[in-house]
Length: 456
Image 1 (spheres, helix red, strand yellow):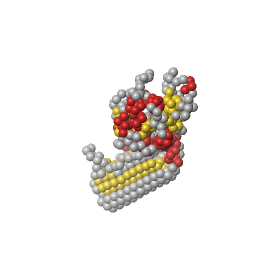
Image 2 (image 1 turned 90 degrees about the vertical axis):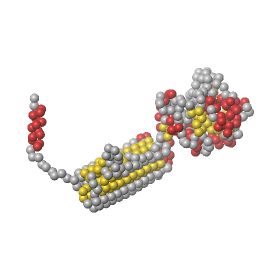
Image 3 (image 1 turned 120 degrees about the vertical axis):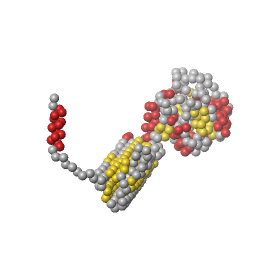
Image 4 (image 1 turned 90 degrees about the horizontal axis):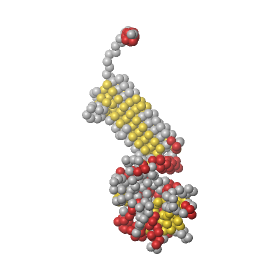
């Protein structure tokens, strides 16, 4: 169910599209349901909200014509329900329900023979959650709301077992019960829990599966709830990686998205953020204070204090500190992108080094080459991006300017301050020098002029 307006989020973005650790909120329960073995998945949506950006391509959508409650939401999917055997109902704004919890609920339903099984949990402080009223045999008789004064008796309010808002139904009985739902209540809405008494009146049993994971109660209504859910998701993600052999030096200052892959024996230093579909190889150290977005790192890579986006770094490479790898950057095995180096849409070959203070864009740097401090590829002529090709084992002097398109051959050299506008043949030295002139007495004349300008 994802048709809520989410007005308390105070956002132009639909509530269930807000990301939780790199994945849209609504996609979390979908992924959990898939992992638990769900077949066809349908999302109930509002007619005025487009949720397609957060939905996998194999998910159907069902429009709830008007905001008339959870019962109305499920009733909107009646055509799909009538074709099904078992129906699992999840909430799009309760993202942290796990595949394990869903699997336990489904197993309990299957073994019970009930027409409906609801997910419940016991809380020391049940607050405004609906209380689960059981009959003498332990079956679920009904759910009593506790949102307003008078909704429940004192005895009912003392019940600690609450409705977690997740259900499994046999499709046929559910379809019949949905048709008879009433909205005779203060809110004028159709409540899904009201099908439970209807099922019992029709001779069916209704049961409950008591969960022990408090995440089933972590719904999102506002930004504060979102922050709490994301903190819990981050904790679970980091714990999963740590139990799999990853060292996270300070979990409290480390952010890892749900789809990030980290191999055993990697080390994540404080202040590091791994986002999107980033992959980190074994023995690699990332951070401190590094951000990786959709980056792929091989084994035994070092990345302190750097920012990497949509790039590929092979084994034993070294990045940073203070390096910026932009989309399309590729570092081969043993390559280096050092301090204050920016690389974009370029390949740095095996063992090649761009040690510091350089910009390499739209370039190919051969194996074993070394680019001196201040090397710049001037790749844009105002109309198009042009390519620079540097051969193997080339040596570029400090402050070399390469005006693309241009090629530097294998084993070639450039002198300090060279401006390279034409190709440099293999094994040659390219220089572009102006004759040095020393202007005697300049400093004294300059000082005298400044004194004169400052005198009233």
